[in-house]
Image (cartoon, rainbow over the protein chains, first blue to last red):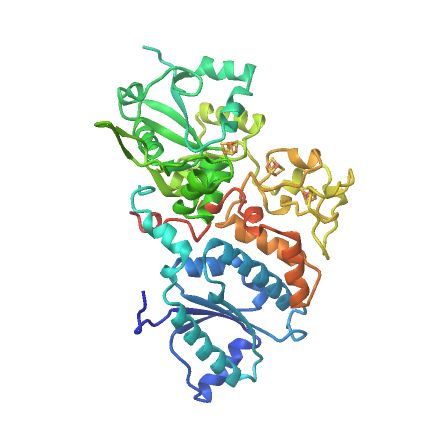
Length: 152
Length: 328
Ligand code: SF4
Ligand code: SF4
Ligand code: SF4
């Protein structure tokens, strides 16, 4: 199923102290990036419960971008390292579940890196466009093709 | 006609352990039988589907259903029991969260069929026969239940009133929940019966040895290492899931020197047990280096999915059917 007009729905979950400010900076500096990304702000990337990410995928996000402070710069000292560990672990699980692990991306983007944010979002949109909608992934095929069983 | 409340017991995709748990009630089961009339229990007594069909709607007070739902027969039976029962209880991990059979959701139906009817090393099937719902042989046609694309937890198929956790539920949990039901003092719909609302660590005899903060450079596998006695398994490097698992089993496994694998399921308010478990395990890893983190995860875990979702893959956010949310 190749759909050239496919516009992915992407969720960004950004840390209040760095990546969220970078997005702000990109905005006020008029650096445009694709409108596919919707942003949610958390106080720290370490607050991102893997449940949030799975919930986003299940509710139709084609990709999730986590933005946190560079290593060593976390406002709460070590939150971003926890994010990194969870991210690595979750990627393994996604793969085994049948979700393309590229749909989850982690980037360290500081408050001054508006340009990096712009580049990352553009890249991510391109990448997910190539993958197509998440409903193409095996995990969702398994759920969606089971039309008979399981209906109340 | 007896005035005693009627109860039914049924199994779907089950290993039999849950039925065994009921039998394990031993003399306590007599108290149940005294209080109730068993109208359907195919594993132990000779009942037929017709016996259930002949009952009035809502005539059964409680149906205890164990096992996950994988076939059309199971779907039909649980729907029938739902119609005939006032209260339906998902009994054990398989019915509650999909259980061990639910791990099959990481394979497609085709992969499973191929393995069991073709590729498995002990399979001899030169004619390449596979089960189909309609089987025709010499002008005779048979119907066998359809094997669905995936495994479902009970509440993904019918409305469920209460849950009894455990693989299998322990004797005390079964007893407590049955007495709760017969007391008439019913908790809110959707409650987990007979277990605790606190994490397993709370009732673990080794909890005193568990420090506030634990960090680990490696995880040990229980099949390759012998745990020290009387010391929290988690600080020894075994991935004990006690901190994220509902208590109520009295730390059965830990007392036998085996780390908790999470069969009592999530604590209240957690939607996805596996995501919570992986979040907890990942945060213990003592490394800031990407490569090292990857190594720790890969070396330790040939199958991380089977560790965090051992009992709940069908109820994970990814496999949760959408029709439920949409009221379908
Ligand atoms: S919950 Fe455990 S004991 Fe019960 S049927 Fe499932 S696998 Fe067997
Ligand atoms: S052994 Fe497991 S259940 Fe017991 S205190 Fe340690 S982590 Fe908790
Ligand atoms: S220790 Fe964990 S796995 Fe063992 S019975 Fe209790 S809840 Fe289940």
